[in-house]
Image (cartoon, rainbow, N blue to C red; front, top):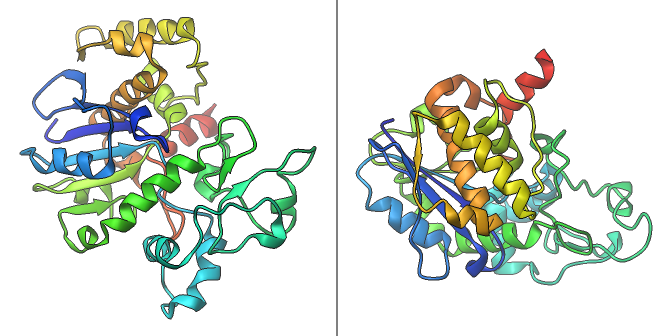
Length: 305
């Protein structure tokens, strides 16, 4: 492997974030040392000091449903304005920390949703034309990055925190050192020189990539909050990786679900890129929605089942 891999399990709370890495020329998956909190900037700084190109996979959305940006475009003065322009505008002029509870209050400047109590309260948003999911999320049974509270397992606060950090570092995007997949091109062309490539990952996809005996892989669900489920998955992983990858400080993953997700995501992405080549990272994408790394390999499994 001629590039580094860093995978981060993300949260709206920095102290709940975890990251694991696999460095070029090594076969050891290990936790990334952190001082109690992890930030987007600290990941970029760490990658900047590595010699080889680096892929940073983050378990947070790097895109929104297309209609969100489409409603912003007339305000921007740029008819082709995409996700990153919208994020910059949102945190400068919008109300990202004032979530709405009813469709009438929703706008591209107030995109986040606190689902109110009551049967059918979530469905009232798509019924009003406010689509909650991107096309790349179809079939994953994932929660929407627009929802920050009101239902179990919300992920909006983590994505919102990442977007805020990205927006504060807007100048960094003008440097060709940091690129975003798939917005800036194909993975094989981005992972060259000393570039840092940031991509969205999803643990349920990575479970399948890491644990399946062969690829393409099925979508796998793990009750990761239960220690016994993490232990069974780690045993399966060690059996499959015997004679290949090694692991440092694996006790962290038995004890903590965030460490578990970051570790197994690192293994899954390594297998995707190292064993499968670039054809399974090629996707069609819009300037608003982005893509989830590895989903194509899961979709292949579905269509050939």
